[in-house]
Every structure is written in structure tokens, then in C-alpha cells.
Amino acid sequence: MDADIRVRFAPSPTGYLHVGGARTALFNWLFARNQGGRFILRIEDTDMERSTEESYRAIVEDMRWLGLDWDEGPGVGGDHGPYFQSERRTIYAEWCERLLKDGKAYRCFCSQEDLKRMREELRRLGKDIKYDRRCRDLPPEEVKRRVDAGEPFVVRFKAPLSGQTVVEDVVKGNITFENSTIDDFVLLKSDRYPTYNFACVIDDMLMEISHVIRGDDHLSNTPKQILIYRAINANPPIFAHVPMIMGPDKTRLSKRHGATSIGQFRADGYLPEALVNYLALLGWSYDDATTFFERDDLIRKFSLAKVSSTPAVFDYAKLQWLNGEYMKRKGSSEKVDIVLPHLVAAGLMGEPIDSQVRQYLEQVVTVVGERLKVGNQIVDLADFFFRDEIMYEGEVEDILKRHYVPAVLSLLENRLSGLDTFEASAIEHVMRGLVSEMGMKTGDLFQPVRVALTGKKHSPDLLKIMEVLGRDRVLKRLRLARKKALELQ
RNA sequence: GGCGCAUUCGUCUAGCGGCCUAGGACACCUCCCUCUCAAGGAGGAGAUCACCGGUUCGAAUCCGGUAUGCGCUACCA
Image 1 (tube, chains in turn red, brown):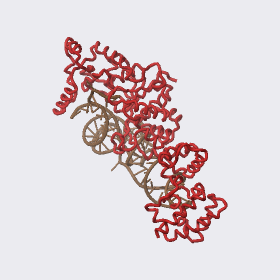
Image 2 (cartoon, protein in one colour):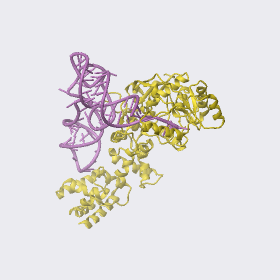
Image 3 (cartoon, protein in one colour):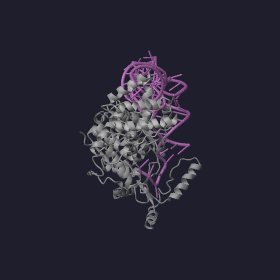
Image 4 (cartoon, protein in one colour):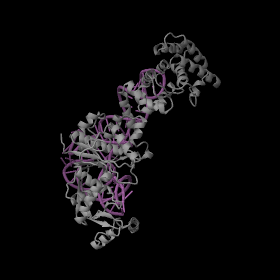
């Protein structure tokens, strides 16, 4: 146990929890659990324009779903709160005041329009795009006058003009930045809200964060943050910048690549343990062979030293495969729970279900078996179990069209209706008998029957399907298909 | 434009100077099983380790440069 190890996940509630954020949260969580430290959730809601209550709720819900529980933060409290940055404004203001007093920051009265114009000019000249520091050394009297006059201003950090700042990163190594390339960035916006870089440092310091594990899109921000730590006489935490997650085209993963939000994966019927396992393997590995990690394995084996430093492409196919592997381990009762919402959403089932329906669902799910890799696939795989009428459309028509079909279906109907018990083994006996009598190949009979019962070219074990459907429905569908086949002749 | 990071099979990765004629997984292909599809079994193809130089007896591994990709360069986080 190391109580001094404290890490945090600090999402901004401006959208849903996406796979990148979830992976960052997971690494933080794993590190904390592995080290016996504490995992803190902090909500960075300083962007009043974009932050929403809805996003916050969704993020929290998705984290709970993934099983990433936090020791301090919204809902659980803690003695380093509040955990919403919007509730910490006076804290930032105080620290900002201190920097101002120490001459380490200054008020800037430039309007956003002026700044924009300035930047465009610099861009046009091909120069380094930075604030020109025109307010950096304004006379104190002028500053006071303009503040008193109610002129809006931001507070900027007085970045050192020379020297170097070194970021010591656990995954990237030591990176040196020339201070001359660092801008006099904004600490406090004119609406009195802090910027990310400032709030982040103040909070990480006050919350006694020991390790900052985050996406490497923040690497360039880190020297700025280190400069702030120095300005307030605090020790920076240990940094670990993990590579980002990309789409197949190697650009930042986004919606156009497919599902990216955890909520979407959940809605599609993915399993949290599969997602956690998959996400852990994106940018981290244990050895050259292990792919499956139960949550406890992950906790035991996780280490920052094994985090890769190269960006990873999100592979939907591999996630689906992994999910399928986890799905195989589920019992039929669990699978019913997984599958039910999708059947309901597809309009194939109503809720609530009684024990008889539940039993039926368990049979269905058993017959479908390993074909089901993701919850929502149940609809394509097994819709015929829940439909009264089967449509014979497209290429399955060609199978019914075969000249022998009406006759053979008729024969089958007769034999099946004479069966004592309508079980797979008995049905198989009948079907195989018919096949050999007619001198057909097995598929010659099974194919049209499959189409008759499911409306599809592919399906799970036909005999088991028949058993679950029961004699009445089987005979009815065979009759209907025979009719259709006759029309097609 | 400036600064930073990255670069091993299509993808995720193993590799931290000799064990590598580069290993595993997903995806792909073939065969077996088989009522189809999955699953399973057996095989296969696939990476001159981005490129060019250097260091070394020896480099995927160390160093430099080039190229490419990505990120930052906001009163977004």
C-alpha cells in the first residue's frame, strides 16, 4: 500500500466518454490499484460554453459501467474537494492573485479581436505565432486605472525569456523545451474562469497528485505547467504521457471512423470486461503472448514501464473478437439479459417478460451459441424466433425456386406431423431418412428448409432451431414456403 | 511557419547490441469437421524492422540527418 500515490482522471464534460478518455482513465485506475494508491475523479468544467450536465452524467455512468471506481470525486466526496473546477473559482483566483503580486503574472487588456488580428499578421509574415507581450510591462498606475475603469482583462503568465524547461516523462523520456518558444499564455480568462493549464496545475498540486497520466496531446502543455509549478514553489508530479488512439486512417479517432463513445459500445451490446481488456492492450502489453486479462490480472500486472510510446489504431475487428471470447463464457441466463434490450429495441419483444418467455429466450440464446459476439447481433441472428411471418426475399428465393422443393417440403410436412416427440434427434432421423430415400445431398433438403424456417441462407443448427420453434410453427412455415415455392416455379 | 512526439507483418504488439534466417494476437488464405454460418482443429501467406549515413567485431535495438504521420501553437480541454 502506498497512500502517497494519487492519480486522477480529469475529463471535461463537453461530450461523451470516448475510447481515448476511457483508456486514459483505465491506465490511471490500474496504476492506482496496482500501487495501492488513490484514484481521483475531477471534472474540468471551466469551459462554460461547452460543458453540459448531460455529458457529466454520461461520463460518470460510463465509468461506473466500465468498473472504474474512484476514491475521491463526485458522488463519493473526499477531503481534497470540491471536485468540480467550476466550484473552485475562488481558489484559482487566490493563486492567481499571488502570482500577480509576485510579479510572475500580469494583466493583459488586449481584446480577442486584437489578438486574432495580431496572430493573422504573424502568420502572414511567417513568424512565430505568439502573443507580443505588449501588456507585460504596463506601468502599475495604468493597470490600476484600467482595472478601476472596469476594462476587461485576462491574466497572463510571465514566461521566462530564456533558458530551458525539461519534462521528465515516464514513457517518453526527458524532453527539453526552449523557454523562448513558450508563450505568455493565459491563466485566468476575462470571465474569471481559469484556463486548463492553470486550473490543472493548481488542482493537481492541491489534490496532491503524484502522477499525471494523460494523453500525449498534452505533452506540449507540460513545460508550461512545470513553469507554473515553479512559480508557485511547488514540486511537479511525475508525468506519464500515453500515446493517442487513432482511426484506421491514422488520424485522431473520431465518429466518422465508427463508434467512439463508450456509451455507444455499451448500447451495441459490448461487454465492459471485453472493452477493458481491449483498451488495456491499446498502448500497453504485458509480454509477447498474453491477450486475455481478467480485471485482477490487469491490476496485478499493469505498469507504466510497459506503456508503449507509439500511437495505436483502434481495431474494431479485434474488439469484436475479444468480446466474442468473453461472450462465450457467459451462461444462457446472463446472455438473455444481454440480448433482451436489443430484441425489445428491434420491436421483436415486449417487456416485461414472464418466466416462460425467459425460458424460451434461454433456448434461443443456447441455439445461437457462439455466433453471438456482440449483444445487438441477436437481431440478425435470431429474429425468426420472434416473427410470425417469414419473408422470403432476395437470393433465398433462388433456393425455394428449385423444382423439387414443393414436393420434398410436402413430404417432410407429413413425416414431421407424424413424429411422436418433436426433438432434434427425431427430426434429424426423419430428415436424413428423407435425404437418402430421395437420393439427395444433405444440403439439398436442409437449404430449402432453412430458408423456409428462417428466411435466411445461414443460420444456427437447423435441427435445434426446429425443436425450439416447435412443431406447429415449423409445419406452418413449411406450408407457407411450399406455397411460395409453387408460385416461383 | 515554430516547437514537440512517433515510425517493427494490413492492425495491436514482443524486442531494450549477439538468443531475430524478427515471436504472438486479430484480420486474411487453404484444408479438415460439417445441413449453411459460426466455433474448433491443422497449415499458409504476410515486416529487407520508414529511408540515408555513422558508432561497433556485431544494430530492429545506440547516434545524426531526411521523409512521413500525429500533437501543441485558443480567453478548448
